[in-house]
Image 1 (cartoon, rainbow, N blue to C red):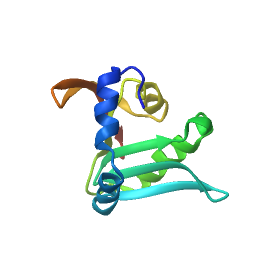
Image 2: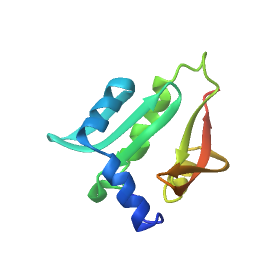
Image 3: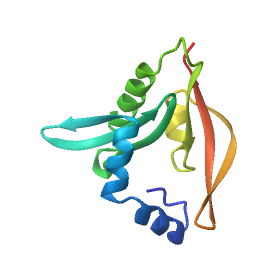
Length: 127
């Protein structure tokens, strides 16, 4: 979770992340899981050409798992239909996405139960 977000906003986001909500998204989007020795170390979700979720277990960050998931998501997007892959990155994730080749296009705020959640809209060209 992005610790640059306020505690109340993090609590609202965590409250909305029920097992049922995650399972529903898994039916709606393409989901990839990064496993090693029977343990899930990362997960990514793609909706057409939008990365909707990308999580790496805290003890496994900076080990290439996130980059591998981004590369896999990019490979799943048909370049003849879409010019790019995009993501609304948390402020904490912006540097990671830039390191993966994404270009920042500008800030976007989402309303989460009356509280503003800042994000950065970023794109990764496919062509």
